[in-house]
Image 1 (spheres, rainbow, N blue to C red):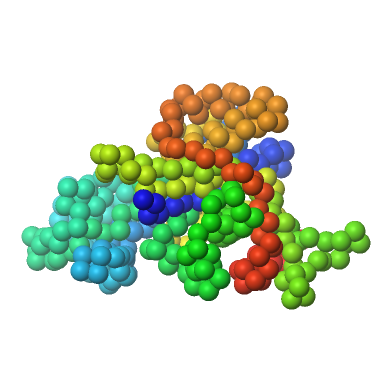
Image 2 (tube, rainbow, N blue to C red):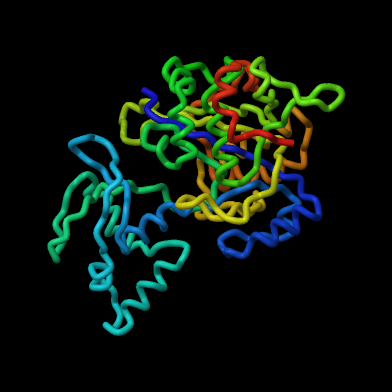
Length: 365
């Protein structure tokens, strides 16, 4: 049974001199080797997911966090107490240096393992535990995925619909609720909720858009019958629909679906900052510098699918070396795959839906 889904956006920018300079300017985090030679062999637009580090910093300082409510069987935003003194008591440092040591830890990109284990101890998920100093805290905090590089990405499930005002507003739309409720087979319809979610994620995490307003032969904007909503053409293709097995189900039931999109063209300028509370500023990474330590395996599978497509269908054999590298580095994908019959969506095909959800994307030039 499918209980959740994800959308992933793959954009392979043309590595012009200007784009190489942009990639070099954005690099320097030392987790991925970025050189001009590697960039020319193939690059991908990526973001560093920092949710876990952000969550840890909030837990230490105190503040609002999503925690699991067993009675409601749902995540709930709660005020979490300050745990700074609790953490400092565990540090191996002199009393006068403990505060400085903790502050230095919290400023790092990756949180130390002992601190992660204090908040997300795998063996005690969903249990309330009393600490030595009497502070109760929920051991089933919402544990974000490990902080690594990945594609512009978003999950589709009840909790994540409320991640941000943009996404919350999106899923509160009556027409989108109807689209979700009725369901539609990805790749068999002209418009699908995953198409729209991918656009939101790309825009929110990178600042880029994959839509172009349609014009007539004289350059005049074409509108829907309401004469207010411009008709927009997708600059992306549906790449693949993957189904992931439940890792906790011994019978290997499928419970998660992944929608990959090939972002062929983009409009706009790459953000200089990350999505608040989620990611760092976007970067352009060499494909042949990605590893299982710095990049999500599931995301790498999407890049493999696209490179394979470019080689076999477009004859772009220059992608052979980075594809082989990814295959050797990330291994075989065990997810089931279905290729979409309709690869290019027509988002304006349902005028009512598009008029309702397109406001954040237009006007685009």
